[in-house]
Image (cartoon, rainbow, N blue to C red; front, side, top):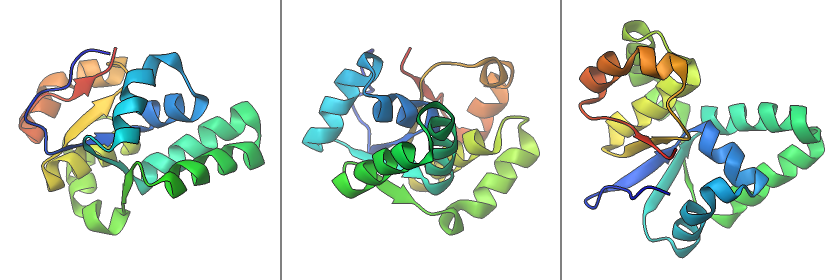
Length: 145
């Protein structure tokens, strides 16, 4: 894993990262160790959890996917940011940047609470909107890969 910036208040995990965590992927092994130690405030949006659930449901079936999501939530390694806390920022992001609603939720949570948004990699949609994202967010998101 590439190093996280030193002066972080905390991070917001996009669904792409959550899915890798739920799968026990080696790609996020170092990040998982950081989360388990509670070395940094780690958050995820409720929308990110929903996305992670429906994507992993397609891979493992609903019951197994839900069990893993609930275990992650119950572990308290991540704080959940509720939609009602960021709904206006999500809409503002979506209005100004043509990216997914889930990605807007991650960025909105980061902007609202002064956290670093973390994505697995820079997908085509994010790459095409890079300048608008940096302008709206005020910083570059962090990409694990």
